[in-house]
Amino acid sequence: MLKGIGASEGIGIGKALKLLNKPIVYEDISPSDPTEEKKRFESAVKVFCDRNEERAKRMDQLGSDGEILRGHTAMLSDPYMLSQMNELIDNGACAEKAVETVCDTFISIFSATDDELTKQRAVDVRDIKKQLQKILLGIEDVDLSRLPPDTILVVEELTPSMTAEMDKKNVAGIVTEKGGKTSHSAIISRSLKIPAVLSVENALALIQSGKDVIVDGGSGEVYTDVDDALREQFLAARKRFAKKAEEEKKFRGKQTVTKDGVVKKLYANIGSHKELEAVLDGDAEGVGLFRTEFLFMDRNSMPTEEEQFEAYKAVAVGMRGKEVIIRTLDVGGDKNIPYMNLKKEENPFMGFRAIRYCLSNREMYKSQLRAILRASAYGNVSVMVPLVTRVEEIREVREIAEELKNELNVKNIPYKKDIKIGAMIETPAACLIADLLAKYSDFFSIGTNDLTGYIMAADRGNADVGYLYSALDPAVLRAIKHIVSSAVKRGISCGMCGEAAADPRLIPLLVSFGLEEFSVNPSSVLSVRRILSKLDRKTCDEISEKALSMENEKEVSAYLSSLS
Ligand code: PEP
Ligand code: MG
Image (cartoon, rainbow, N blue to C red; front, side, top):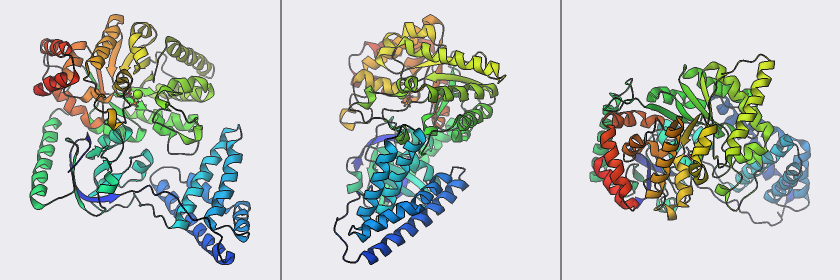
């Protein structure tokens, strides 16, 4: 049995399929016959173009933009690029080397310009180079859109682009080598309701493709020696899990209210307008966190204001007047967007991230805020600012929003006049100055995924310091309590959109602190509603007092686990 982090509950039973990120290594020796080598190169180009067209068609069918891939074919088919590669082969280079030399030249020319569009071409050429070299070397990529039923995917890390291509109905479970409970791999698997175990050391070396595997996404266990008895045991566990889900269904359509009658807001987190169905299906009362960075990822250029407007509007309209909190771009940290040419940083989590990046890239930020403002005319939209550390940041965002509102007024473009602008509290600095930030924020939302990491100085994706990364640590609990009480004192609403908001052990404490809004994965909404229905303030205050008197995480965790 292999052990990792249980990141998405449920039991997956199926056959392993490994996705290897094979290195592109070739021997740089001159071919004996350049004519033959050119033929080899020509057929690789043909495979590239055919494969690209097929993928582009599939993307069109899925409603994505296949033109990006067709652009790659057009670039490669450019006679200049091809003739340069052929010339190098004539002069004794092997095809792999010719591709590398010509592509690298284009990459450095394109990267050196100031023009954003031209810079993005460098990303395209990098992609062309990788694909062509893989074809030449016979490195096959697994076609994620056509998976056999009951596949257990074993990958280094699950990326959003993999998720886009993945044949979700046939994925019974996911095992990754990287990622913690709040990594994007975890969030994606939970929202897809696919059992997942992350951070399984050497999973790719230890699990063989085609082998029977059982994934227990709750306990974090992965079984690779599956006999009949074990299979029976887990088939029964899978049934129990389904039964619990059935019980939670009774809370569908009900109000979210504690046992003593306090009404709470129960919202959902999303990463794309395409998840709207999951939000409605999960019975969330609003969207507490729309992570807009996914709109910017998995493409080769910045989404236009129009594209953003359409995506935000779709959610605003789809939620029919229920609140939709749109978080402005949270780039950097673990979220890289290649065409933005972010510098490689020694310490990206402490670096040029989120609001820091946005305030230095005003035009891009303005176009996002304008798109959100315009979409606000179609529903109950609010704006949320990530990674706030200083009062100036939230004030500056408010000033930009005012400026944009004036522009829209002049053009008679409608928007929600009293649109709320709130701050995410996810840094120790924001926590410590929560009283000051509350003056300039219409609401707070606590981002425990980052807050826990920053308070404990423990990277959320690093398994070695995973033992420190816990929202139940006395330090994090005190931070949360302080943030909520600062909001309560100022009379603004305080929510939580980090993964801890759905943790049954923490919920009694959040009720005691006075948290108003819980924003969780769409699939956790009913479970949180059920938990809240069983709690009253007096009991929660007692639990909270006791938990906060404890000196270490282990004690807190054991105590709270014994109650839930
Ligand atoms: C958080 O940090 O808790 C959060 C919700 O933001 P993200 O996970 O996108 O960083
Ligand atoms: Mg965060």
